[in-house]
Length: 223
Image (tube, rainbow, N blue to C red; front, side, top):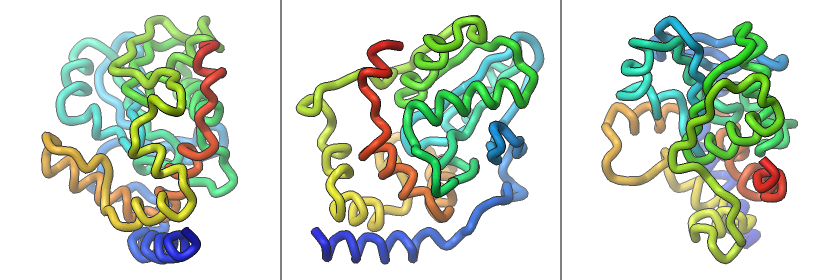
């Protein structure tokens, strides 16, 4: 495991060659300051605000290909990159997890001067938006959960996440891949964006920190 940790750490350092901090010119959206941190958002349309929150290792592009254009015909639609993912900041001192990300969503709403918004969360984003709605019902007009992450016992969790939890194994798994999710059915445009994001320094550390320390099941159950 020690050898795997060292090798995985070296592989990650070789893959994460982009220090980040700036939004590439050909990436839609803009950077805003929310809670004192740089956050990437993509906005379109007018009307009632709808905030879209992606899942694990995702980005705003999870919504950009199909969902965001359709919603923007009727709503002020905002897709958000969670801290540590997409093109948002990757602060090394952040405790990545439900608490930090739910706080980020409220910070984004404050930064965009949105007193209330409809929240749409997919997978991990579903857990985060549920917590926001539970903590701040006055800020949430509607809540839509798309295949949301729900509290699971350890034995019920997918093997992929169980392996990521193991020091050394997780580093090797992420150090030998150039993007997530590695699943069929995603467009080449999506996978190209995902590869670009996985070159940003701190991406894999953020994901591993969440998997190992950021899953607060009692918090999610309460929400």
